[in-house]
Image (cartoon, helix red, strand yellow):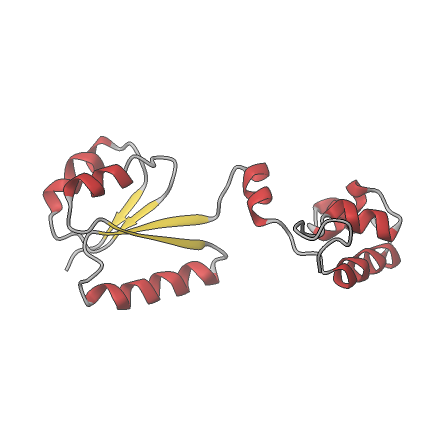
Amino acid sequence: MKRSSEKNQAVTMRDVASQSGFSPATVSIVLNNAPLARYIAPATKRRIEETAKKLGYRPNVMARFLRSKRSHSVGVLFFDITDPFCTLIMRGVENALYQASYLAIFADAHNQRNRFERYLEFSSWTFMCLPISVSEIFRPRRSAGNWPATTSAR
């Protein structure tokens, strides 16, 4: 459910706080199940959770990523996504990451060295490179130890 005053904006914790009568800090602690939540009365928790549900509150995942400085995402780079082997790998990787509460971000290098190297410039990401048919492209970067990576080759 969207805010009645602004149709394009999602319900925020502040909206939940305003409707429930509790401070934004208390609402944040309850909705994030923070360690301090154990000190909040069950009736308060219940009221906040019911208000959040009634308003249709959904956590802003991107805001959490920015605040925690962790994206819980893994870039999965395929050298050639048209390889039939990739479909099985994509399904398995996505399932495993989903179960661990991570988001898979898939990219394809189109069998082009320059695309492959450009994707590797996102050094703050964790990458899985699958499958690597041209291992000499990847080997120099991996040995430099600049970023975490996993490789798979047939």
